Length: 144
Image (cartoon, rainbow, N blue to C red; front, side):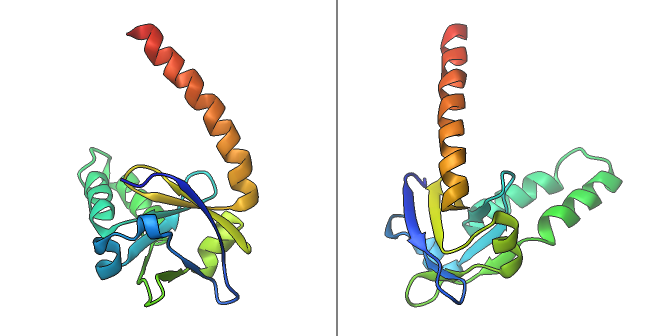
């Protein structure tokens, strides 16, 4: 499980270290899969979680034409990335541009995956998410 948030700097070659708390044996051995996140971030999956996600798409009851479009949108923009000897990953230019990543980034644990945000966008998103999360928790408690 990935929890916590950690600020880092991206170097001039587009590399950033994975926070020590997130450096599992699986990631060290197999690398990670990077994809565009839904809210202008980069989603970082361990290979085992990526496989679960891919399997859920493949086994969905979507019509073939919609499944093909979904596969193109997701898998064509995904990158398998190795972790180097200094525990860094290189962020593909396409994903950096998509997420507006500059020098300052935030790694945010999101349970079974990690999100990588530009610092500016994370500051905005985290305050919105916190407010909405409290409202969601309250609605759940009212139903219980």
